[in-house]
Image 1: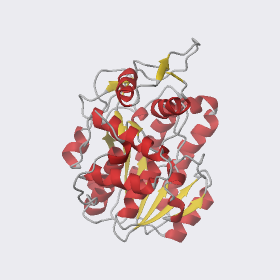
Image 2 (image 1 turned 120 degrees about the horizontal axis):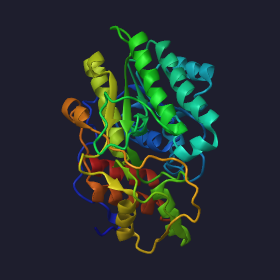
Image 3 (image 1 turned 30 degrees about the horizontal axis):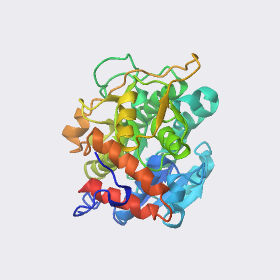
Image 4 (image 1 turned 90 degrees about the horizontal axis):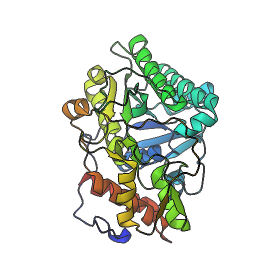
Length: 368
């Protein structure tokens, strides 16, 4: 597929409100708004006419999507750590949101090995503090905890994990996300199981890619850095299979889930998977090959060390529940997922680009 960064997807545009206008004029609080998925979600919500409030640590670098899109001037934001229960509660009390989405987390497997205490404290107590804030803020009608496909006990089976499969995790990150799901379930059954309380759920997504993600030890950002620096790309686990998704796919799922919780209430509580179609799971080497069709000058090599931290080799999601009950399904195939992703980076890297406008253009094309 040929790719020209300045003219990607110049088709007739349609509306971006796929949610019955439930977010228009509503107050939405997003933890982790300075992060990759959180910043994309805030763009969509702002364009839906929502009153968006963010709570998160400051962005890590000047390249982060939150910075390059200028979100700080477009939404309300408070610098804060989700481990700070009192500060988070005070922000909920001040904003009085209608919806709350919890995306703040320690998001990387390798970093969870480097600092497991911070990983567990952020991903477990952050979830507890989020639900405590929701529980003590009567304005909240809907709350969604965003976790990951890695929350499941992974036996390397060649089929997609269903929402009813057991939680688990060998590495600290996966274990912490399995625990976050158990926390969500506990709060659902203990505090949010009667009418008049907030309607809560969790969203479990696969490996999310797209412009604006500059995290270390992620295959696409690593490839873009290799492209920029004319350096070699070291591929750790070329045969690892993952449910790759363009960032707007799970964000669409989270927002659709929020809509259903708002309009149909408790019947949509619980966990929901958002991933690619069952026949659209690819390994790291296939991702590299597809990217190299668009950026052929990237040089690829293997690690020189034999020391390896444990990472799952095979992981798939069963999305039948979301497809059948949420009226949600992936909109992009694998080739378009990679093309959208690389286009987003190339737009961002061009001098003088209005990155917010470029993200909005992709959003409109995605919704078309």
